[in-house]
Image 1 (tube, one colour):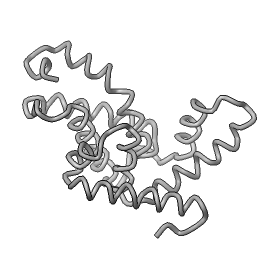
Image 2 (cartoon, one colour; image 1 turned 90 degrees about the vertical axis):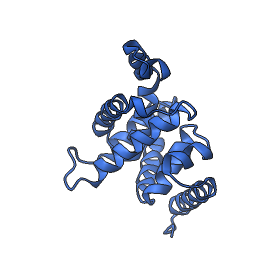
Image 3 (cartoon, rainbow, N blue to C red; image 1 turned 30 degrees about the vertical axis):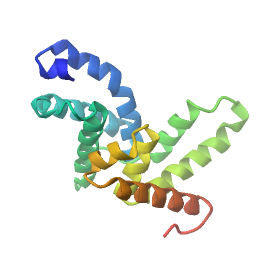
Image 4 (cartoon, rainbow, N blue to C red; image 1 turned 60 degrees about the horizontal axis):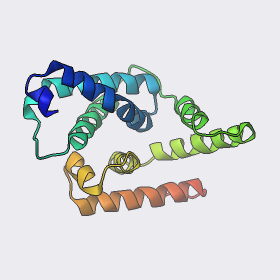
Length: 175
């Protein structure tokens, strides 16, 4: 990022090559729609490009990028009319099909994946975002910075999200 902020245009391409796929995975899970997630990746990198002079070298690049992406997704989700309909089933099937090797377990895995995604969508935004960022490998401190909250608040959000998700998957209300 420092090379790009310093004027090296090819550094932006290297950043995109390195971070586009992990960011797409995160955004697909966050918004539940591959097409919207792809647009959000593009929008996030456009915002990164425009904000390159505001990058703080003392902060981790991944934290800054995921903050931009999360805020871009929040803005998209707040729109009264989203560009694409939500399709959790397609996301679940695509995600699970790429990870489940045995053909005889695919149907059950698709149902389970769909159930997880449906329950994940019911979580409050902050809890869902924190849980997904943990799944992407960010530390609690990085998530706290990305969300503008404390580490203890992030830990509590992740704990609540996991508890609610487990309860809802077990058939409870998750409240």
